[in-house]
Length: 90
Image (cartoon, rainbow, N blue to C red; front, side, top):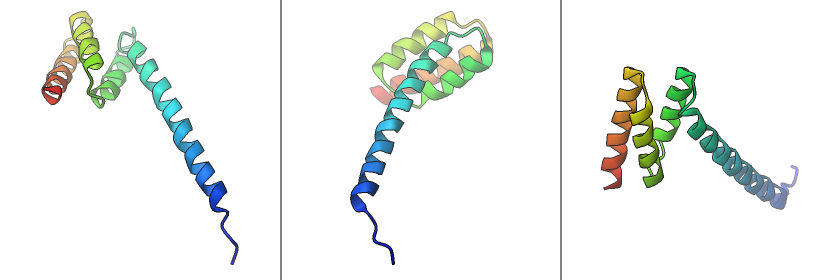
């Protein structure tokens, strides 16, 4: 039976966590820009991502988005997310 190099396994796990956090941060930043994209499907995807992260900053972002959005379906989705987020932060 082969001996498991636990230090290498631990270093690999820690490296994976760090890389995951970096990718998540970049994704969040990109989604915030996509929230005001010209492409409706990008805005919908950004709403889905932002909706999963309740924060005071995202409440302000969603308020701006709801005021800006012209498509009724996307505006309603933004309003629902905004209400849910505001209630979860109270």
